[in-house]
Image (cartoon, rainbow, N blue to C red; front, side, top):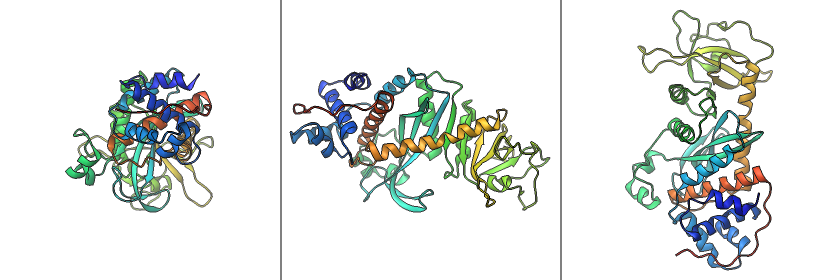
Length: 376
């Protein structure tokens, strides 16, 4: 598989020849340029002509082409490689300087334990063997951006783009992937242990008849199955065997099996006391040590599956994290300095294409020097 053939297929929705030429050049630069993937460094790697820098910058930030069309081509390219029955969702925090980058805001990052000035993006991934391929992205815009007409105008944020909580962005990614692929049995694997409103995502996926394996925060309210009048209790305390008042609880599904992680059956509380608690879920822990901690907490609708199999699915979340790290370190995820909303999505489409080619077809040869690239 040549990079030229891959590029022609993935970017065939681009209407103009100069756009497709720029897309191929940018893709070549991402694959061959070491270190930071700034536009200036990418341009220097493919041409000595100084005008190429401006051409590539205009192509990413200003040229009118559709992110969704490119990501749909990537999705179909991956689907022809027979992806497995798991869709992953992953969050990526993109630290930024200043307040001009689209969607930038102050946010506490659970994993680093610091408050960061950053963008927040969500990605969806298809599994092909041991690989995970990014096939869609969503930029989370806080209300400070969606409700500010001047910011919206300067960043060219479309009228249709309004504030959504993180769980709603996740549902949107699942809906878009569902529209592209005929995979009604695919299980959604999501890392959401820093999202207090993850229950909305679980309920939304249940309404879509999607099975889930989702990491959840310890404070998530759950209802133990099997009690006559269950009262909400935090997921973390329940797996430690404590009820709402600190009383000791016995897991309703009996003694823990040595072959699987600690688990208990639960419901999610309804949106109001009148609402049914809905279907049962299995709450389980992974990665606990000998210090009395339960480790990471997970919720799954696969209540009748073998616990070890469910734990193996949850373990794939580390692969999603590894892909995001590779995109940060080797494909320029952090290096887009533009301020426009379309530019952010264009950059994400390009790095996704580069990662897809490298992952599925091996390293590309260093690009040859090319004639100047010009956009009208």
